[in-house]
Length: 142
Ligand code: HEM
Image (cartoon, rainbow, N blue to C red; front, side, top):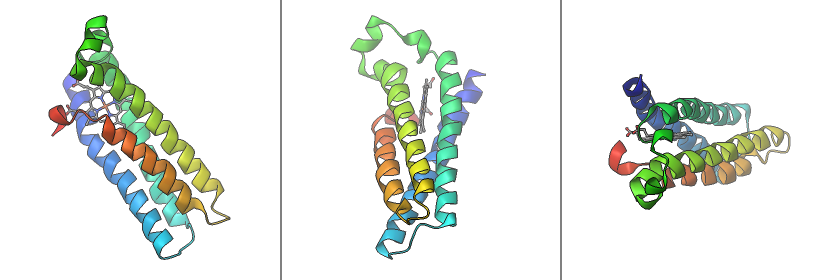
């Protein structure tokens, strides 16, 4: 169970990052080419958001199964930067990032008519991506 969840969370991270980066690139190119926000832009952004939500589900279950998650929460954990990253910072910051990405998608959806969806994706997905990248356990992942 633990190994399956860990591998799924580990490999699905590539899908989530790729989907968010593609949504961001499409928004940037549309802005540069002065194209308004279209239905296909929204579909790409939706794929990025759904990928994050699936990753969130894997992460939430993993948190209670992994020896580095809930089981590792203690005063000692806070003194060790790697343990603190996995037990506290990674879950907390990533949930925040996924909330920001979800808000961005809804803003882009509402802005379809006015054509300002690209800006919403650029700002919210951009901030979300930076937050996610800031708390990846790189030494363990790659
Ligand atoms: C889009 C959001 C997320 C991304 C991209 C992501 C990515 C990753 C990556 C790349 C790893 C390292 C995997 C490895 O060692 O091969 C990891 C580990 C982990 N993640 Fe996430 N994660 C996300 C959200 C979450 C959330 C929301 C939680 C918990 C609520 C969580 C809990 C964990 C735990 C506990 C580990 C350590 C697993 C272990 O080594 O036993 N993740 N995550």
